[in-house]
Amino acid sequence: MVAHATMKNILFICVYNAARSQMADGWAKKLLPPDVQVWSAGSSPAYAVSAEAVKVMAEVDIDISKNRPKSIDDIPMEDIDLVIKLCAEEQCPIFPRQVACESWAMPDPGLFAFTEKGALQAFRETRDAIRQKIEELSGRL
Image (cartoon, rainbow, N blue to C red; front, side, top):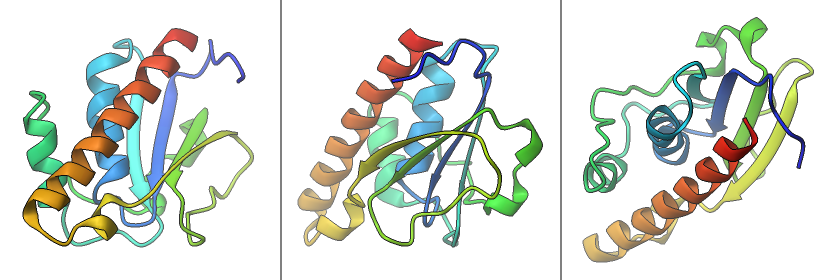
């Protein structure tokens, strides 16, 4: 892994910007130094943030209920120092300019949800995996 001492503008991306990248946005804003600017976006933004993502983040006292999915086109790309891709799907977004990039490929928790309990468990596992990656990133900033 590359040390990112000068990485102060981080973009989390996934396809829909409805769950994984929104949870990463919430964790990053809570756990990273205050001088780090955080964005999240997707290549095909959903209409709303996943209700399950909102619920499991609220369980750890992080409110993402007011977040809205955004397109990569809505991000000030010239400011971004580091892009972190959270999706494992083939259609995971490609950032349109050369910039440091990491892949934290995680399955979409919504794909594994057939019951409410199953959905929430999948989202909790993803939430906790993202927290671990954000904590590791924090140690490199």
